[in-house]
Image 1 (tube, rainbow, N blue to C red):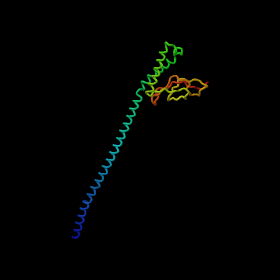
Image 2: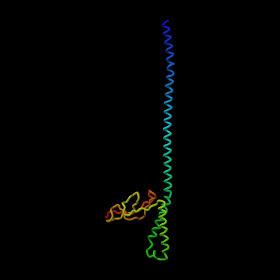
Image 3: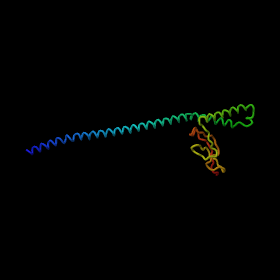
Image 4: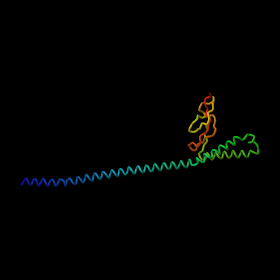
Length: 186
């Protein structure tokens, strides 16, 4: 009988062992679920941070584009008006000195000069500036070489004549200067 009781004791111990392991397995399962949920929360936090950063970058880019649009909105109009300024300067440059002093033409010349000054003032007000090219080394970012002129006086690649003035708007090139560049004489 002793053998039977020891078998019963072993059976009871076996039955108790799974019961003791069941809570432990459930605890491991709960720990696994908690770890998975914590990982999911961390991933969601990261995604949220990335989305916020992306939104902020988009907002900054749009603000920059809006500032540029405001600053350079007049670019097309300015390019068109530059030809008017060029023609006005050419007209003033062709008036001989004797006509400038003639009483009949003095008012006309004064009006043309006042118009040219007002146009330059409007250009400055909107950030449009003429830049000087004479004597500078050719810069393809600011100048467009139209012809090469043999010259013993100027080094090769130096601008010796400005055919059309160049302009910038704020910090950008509005129109390159059309220039003649020195080259070594033959």
